[in-house]
Image (cartoon, rainbow, N blue to C red; front, side, top):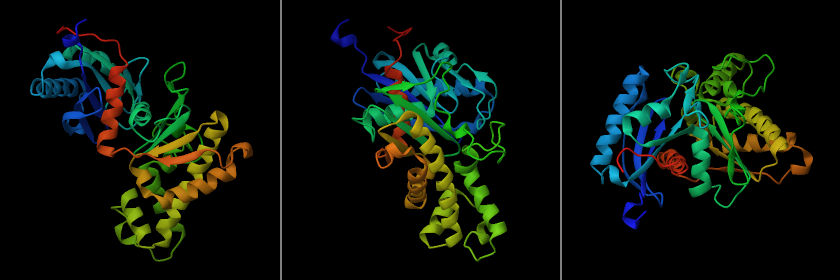
Length: 327
């Protein structure tokens, strides 16, 4: 292969519940160009893939052409790297097993790697972010759902079927709230965005003290509850204290089994800062195996949130065997 034929760019695609974003990324992690559209605009997955493929082709042709693109990486909730499928996603419009990597490969004529969104974020953190220089760490994403990726000796551990790291669907309250996955008491039902709002509503029912949340009960989300914490609202602070307590227990169990160097938190809910982190740290230290107490760092992602998932998806793309109809 001549130097001129070496391809130095990939396409990274981040599929989230609200928006799909895609970008051309070079070998150094520079984002050359990006675009996006609302995911929910296309509840039919075939129409979605057709539109996404056309958008990628247009972006690529406007920025150097196909000859510069090596492959495509896709980050998605419930994505399975081993099968290339989005499998039974509880928070997306599509149901069942969706062979997203194969569908895009057929339309784009390029190699496509697909992974769980937190798997992609872990790769992004390892190459570009808070996990740089670490070999054994956990990335836990706190957003609409709660997902994680286990990285051991610098490699993601995916498990036999590709589902390792589903800490959001581990039980933290026996017989507790119904989760979107169908089980009860999952961490996601308490530390995901909807779970935090449910905690707030339950607290307002049981505690009659004044709260800024009462006048905004139909508008509550984790960001608004955080804003009320910043204004000193005691019940809002208690919402995050309860959330952090359960999150700390789950992370302590996770760390006790795997003994990581660090746990990196990312996602919108992690923006609650000290209101979430302080009770999480306290609960973690209370419940982790005593030989690990004080030795596992809980860190926040230091990557720009607008870039992180695209960089993670692009890292997936570099790890897939090259294939192209346009060589």
